Image (cartoon, rainbow, N blue to C red; front, side, top):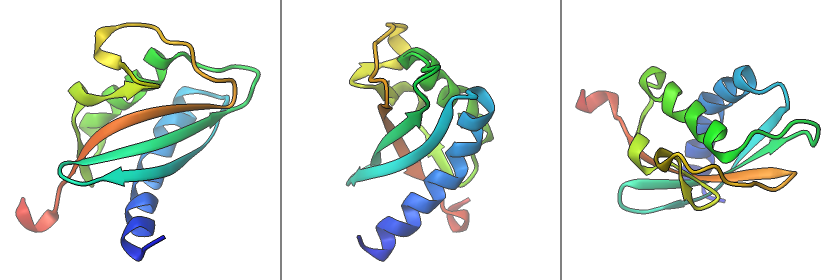
Length: 114
């Protein structure tokens, strides 16, 4: 892993985990899997205990609600999908018992550009 990946992954993890911990008692941790270039697309895995796993819409909606409170990067709430299902479509999607993967379109907000 590069220093840039590690740094960006750390920012995403420390920013998003508190929202999921608050929303789901079964939430365990978030792992950044990869980034894509252009507008930054982040692939993440969320781990939950097997006793209570939220559905894809619930997972995505946490990020949609949190977006306005996130200041270190922008979240494109129209580009959030969980396990390949667009959250804004309102379609419930079954997720694995261990992890829920979701794609988040993020554009970095640089304080020097504000």
